[in-house]
Image (cartoon, rainbow, N blue to C red):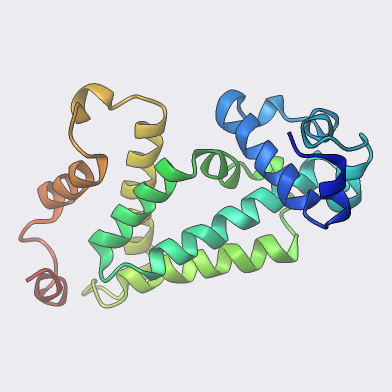
Length: 195
């Protein structure tokens, strides 16, 4: 538990965010309350409201943080397949962020930090499909690629593909899925990147 003195050192915001991630990972976003998080951080029940105003503000901050982490993960990938792998890895390593990020009803849609972080992540997703379509429909290609990575990550986190994945590394399993769907079907530029 974080002591009250931590608040005075300026890291209450991070302490509350970390506690919120623990709660969400264990019980889901519905179990989150500012009062409980204040108790976990060892501060007054009003202290988290100073940073987040309310539960929606806290969830929005978590989502913005998550989109920022996702953008960083995607930027480090050399090609579309590896962006998908990084997406799956992000979901596995940050399951609480992942749960919150894609539930717009929980968030302040007009929050500037959230909008900026979402745009950075979206730009990285778009960069992964740039030049891979002959039709010029990069938006649809991006949605298709995102659907595959997001769908697999969601199924993995909800244990719906545990039997299929078995003891295999989820990232390698995802690579094999993309191979099944796209081998020999990528435009020439995509095949050259893979070779």
